Length: 624
Image (cartoon, rainbow, N blue to C red):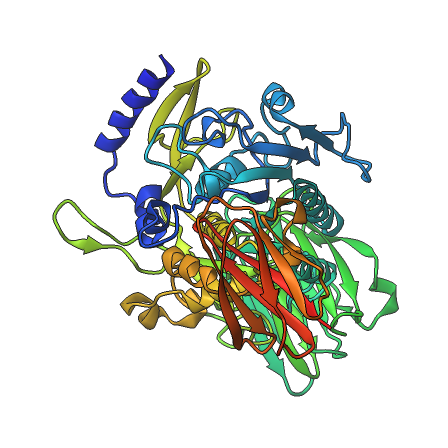
């Protein structure tokens, strides 16, 4: 009965495909289809043996896409809901609820309501990275990965805790970890890519964790403001409350050790200033390192805002202000900035609840104030996308052949955020399909009101597939590709995985037209990335030794050593490299013990690259 229902849904899906950038078209655009088919590869690669950790919210643990493609093996290992306080918390933490194993996850059903209510974002993103498809054509990039989910509370420590928890679980499982983050905030860390999150991300990257993050969706909004002060001066700009938010968060910073002052003012519909707050200075100790509340009277009305200021900090010595402004639709509002020196930057983002929000509002220059400053759409990549070691992903439309025979799509998505990252660091790093991507929807959501592309029935419950757009969709696509790369060569460092993805990205007329500020190094190419991974020497310590089919004894060795191969292959190729990358020797291994004569080897460290019909293994040999 279940198979019949799924098959019926599949027929419906094929008939309703239309002209959207569906996930199966995205797979062709990103060359994932060739990897999963194993064309001219040692095998088909599907992400098996790799864990993808998704930090998000709106997880439906029961969705059938989290089974394998045969609908028999459930692939979610654990979840940590940081908002659910019933416990038990994970070992070493004192908040949230950890749900371990299939039975507990299915009984829990979904994560709890949080600042986004019962959402759906996490289920959709996870389905893109590694969804099994539930019998449909909407199969994720790496459909045999296993998952860790964290419904994350977006503050510095909670995000760091989520990363550490995922790393610890992956270590227990003895598997490589990719962490996918389809979110970004301008009020975490510092906008130059420094801070506690950046430090922890680099530490875990050095331990082998691959971090993939979205570039952001502010490419079509002039939400960034900049001005270079060369003498004492004051600039003004009108800031617009973003969409349906409850206000704005203005993140402001100046050059190192260059203080600035700001005030908030109200205007009538003719942009005439009718009320203004005092100027608050980052050099005034009365306002530093604490939240300051302020009510600004506007006739019989008022505006409420609060801010946190730093005169300098240990990471970049810059003065920084986070200004939170409650929405008031009766007037127009602006910001005034005064300074004597420095390169000033500000970002206008949505305020939700107390600090959340990552979509931008405009900085405008009214026509009757030509000396004011308007915003632009550059430097709109936020934390964690602005962190150097992260793989930051832009979004483009999938390129495919339409029923008419015309090739369509391929351009950058208009919403995809512009680089560079602050300090002229090249961001985004790479682009992937992210417009109208159909994937799984949480069946428990109370917030989705859009169109349903398809429905499948499983365990007497209806599960939907919907099309969403954003770099939130392109991020898990690349996370899935990273999992394919790690399955092909689990000994790669995280830095090698990133380098492989960037070096193998492909370029076309669209990347040439839009340039690196939109596409980074180009469009992700899963096939070439996997091919390069198979021919790249990695470091063994990133993989649990209990899963190795090859051992070297003794190690360190002097005159000879023995390489034991536990493999079904009749013969296995082994190449020996010195640390400069020069191949010293090549030999064929057979199942069982193989003798390696070390006469002529200069004392030092060598890397053995062993290639069988399934994967590439790298071993370290020390010759005394």
